[in-house]
Length: 371
Ligand code: DAH
Image 1 (cartoon, protein in one colour):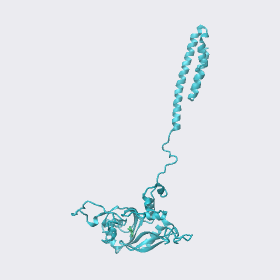
Image 2 (image 1 turned 45 degrees about the vertical axis):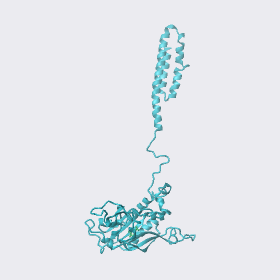
Image 3 (image 1 turned 120 degrees about the vertical axis):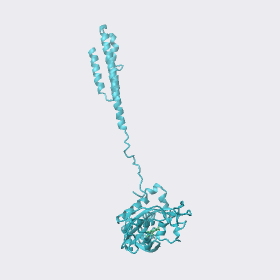
Image 4 (image 1 turned 90 degrees about the vertical axis):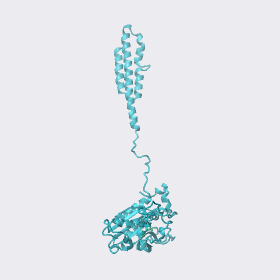
């Protein structure tokens, strides 16, 4: 009898050590200690044994039962710990994985994307990109660009002037007229600043924000321009045309042409407006079905920018300093300049009907453009 108990205890011990989950342990508990199991039955029937055996058998059986219980509870703790770490591992959340579906990360605004593309085109042609202040002085925005004192663009209705504290050395509490501050109305003031900072030859483009008090479907109070300036000792209008042809083809397609029309700007002489042949009707002015081209309105040409040969009077406004020595002698240097509207170029290219769409921040509009 004692041997059988020892056998049961040993069997149970092995089985418990081998059990891999709580369910297996529960079954072992029933098998070795349950109501119908051999060991408890044996204990129950102990009274039937001869009196001299009862003590030893009872003690051994009891010890065996306690030992098996202890083994089960120890093993069950181990198994539970394993099960917990297993399920923690299985449920682990990798916060570095992309969500499903991946979250959109946003994109460049169509104006920023267009501006960068323009910068890239001119960088490729050998120009350098410069930036300049949006708060300018009357001197750089108008005077140095040869605007006469009565030029209409100077009016308060056309330019945002800044109210300022009294300027230095200004007893009347008002700055010198040329030192008054405004929000630049174009990027052209940077022509003069660039020449003050660098000697010729100079090949620069200046992208940036400009401001005018206008607001309707084709004007916003703030918009963007890219200015260009090339000054060297033998620059002609043909160089201007070639440069802008390269730009027109890069933006509007390889087949494009450009034409120059006489115009007037105070700071260029001669001045031109530059048209690009219409990419919608290939410059025909009408579509295949004979209808008038809606983009160029039957003209075959799209006006894209203003340009010209730098007026010698502008060089005369650039003082020679140590920084830009030998300076800009109107007798020695020649150059061309242009100014283009970034909004307008993107509108033409993408068929955007209303300028205000750029600034309403409607993602359904914005997500159609940009990288
Ligand atoms: N600054 C002019 C404007 O805002 C555009 C312009 C015209 C710029 C001719 C130039 C230029 O550099 O040569 O309307």
